[in-house]
Length: 457
Image (cartoon, rainbow, N blue to C red; front, side):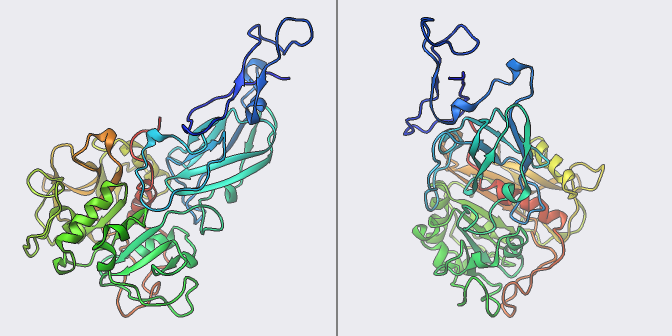
């Protein structure tokens, strides 16, 4: 039996799979008969991992580019691996997804995509029907490679490495979108290539559920995801049990804080949702969920996130601007990769690293308190760096190693060239234009917010 080795990078505690047991430490081929050595004993695909370096040959590898569901936007930081065991189904609803938990099913070999979306997965088993998993958060595609030859690279086609457009192609997160009349986050999701059949109301069959803030209130006629008016956003955020049905909640700007629809009960529910592992993306005037009701002043406010010891400082300016934003490569651990990715996808002009061209820039945040959040993007005006996008993990009151969720705030309106209006059924207000620079910036975060909390161990 040929020698084998298992590269074990992550192992689920309940997975009782053993790689190889090396009995012959003398090197060379296995020795049978009366040699006094037992042949190597190995199990599963680990028996087909070839030591190509020992033969003076390149590794057995798979390569490719991971794209968003639209098949055109390459993605950074997506995990690619060959599982040891069956990864199994993903748990439903918001979960405490920490990177330290490892990859489901364990991994013989793993890698992640670079700033161009490219990957090279080395030391893969050289055999038939090799399973491959491509995953970030609950975006997951699984497929098998029919035949892999030893000690050479096999490029994978885009259709294999593109994230799923719908549930029939793989796993997708369950997403709630609170539709607002001043932004159109739902249009960005559609531009990402997600099938129309996945946009529905909460009682529908889609994975993206629409809720009525003060934007679009219904779907266009004969919509593939079904019919029916969008339920009120208060039915979503007044109840933590409703919120935790969703992996991610996107809150489109309503043009004002509208404190009358965001009670203290809702504030408590939103924080509890993020603390247990939910992801929250809040656009512009949804700063109310972090700051509390201040415009006009009202008593409701989230615990921990608001006040002088909260996450950020605010002036709630009505400023609108069109000058470029700047990527922060210092305050954000992913800042350098984000900046490189923005250049690679043409969002930052060639030769202008860290520049994010803007349409309808907004400003309500004035600073980050201490090191409680990572600043991704800022607007430089009059010598002041106003945060445009920042992120923090939750529960904020816990040590970083004991956090489960993520909150992203963006003063930047996402869809400057799209709109969401009560009189225009979705997707009538969505622009058919290609992704703008600010949409690409938020697209990066659209997938990054799905990823696990903390470094992958």
